[in-house]
Image (cartoon, rainbow, N blue to C red; front, side, top):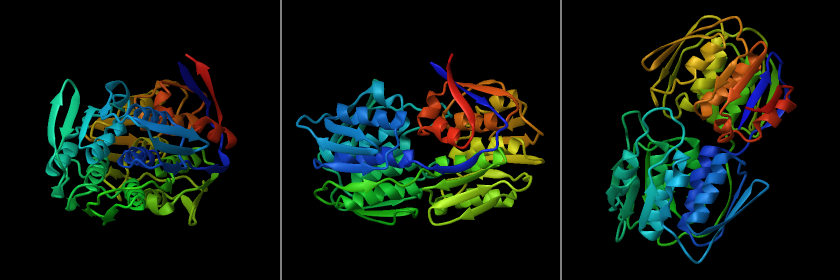
Length: 420
């Protein structure tokens, strides 16, 4: 097993191109299960998670080729409806095969999911949604068993304790596109990744309206066809690179990014005093003056993304003043706090709040990644810290950031791998 080693204190400078969105491509790959035709998906990042989804699709009877960012999915003769524990347990997003399997085959057996350990992440909204469409659901030996003679359109309210659910919206939308009649999803997730999935389904022949709003309407169709589609840029990778420029007092031009997907992050960074120049598909981040502390509350889109909370905490840890970060999506998503404190940060957790007192500098230290975004926060901290930082369990980082060492290295970062 490898660890990532960073020699901090280098101002990052140059250009970086953002990869396709992990959180968009995984459900879109799953949606290829809805047709027997070939689907070509472009801009696919080479990540642990995308390769896991390829294995899942192959296990379900699909032919899948992945070459130079293009995934081609074709149908084979034998179709399987069982998504195995060994694969699904490693990645939560793989649970989104439930909807398309149920929609196409009218039956599915899907292992309960795994993924990052960031607190309770139940699948009750997924099951509520497909039940409303007429599926019989049972849970046996760690698997969700779903079957239906036919699916029927329905009104479905998908609001949860912590707001809307992206994956539940994805699953219900994919099950409903082949159901008989009209479906209304209220309290639907509005994230750009949900919109990208809807656009993919529409290209396949689905009838969907309202994507990007809290009410999505779907008119079921009898058949979907193959499609060619390009994935949207990864807004979380883009946001991480924006913070990399600021935390290292650098100057980075970030290409292949849609600034409209990062409105709240841009607003918060400008409130903190950052200089940001936006165009249609790029963001120029240039450090000009010390930042000031700003408070953050994570909320469903278009609110501040929970997937940027840990990275923002790293930046605020060396920003003068007091920052209060409130986590309203996953209240237990603070496993990076203790590791940042090992590097000299002053962070105290109080329930769903983290109180961050900015310090003058962080010091390099051996730290351990607990989940995908925590690993990104430690990476940012290591880039800014004095001395060497070594990050263990970097397989978390590999789940969501394509060629991150190479990209940062081209910006001047001193970063390399060593065996543990």
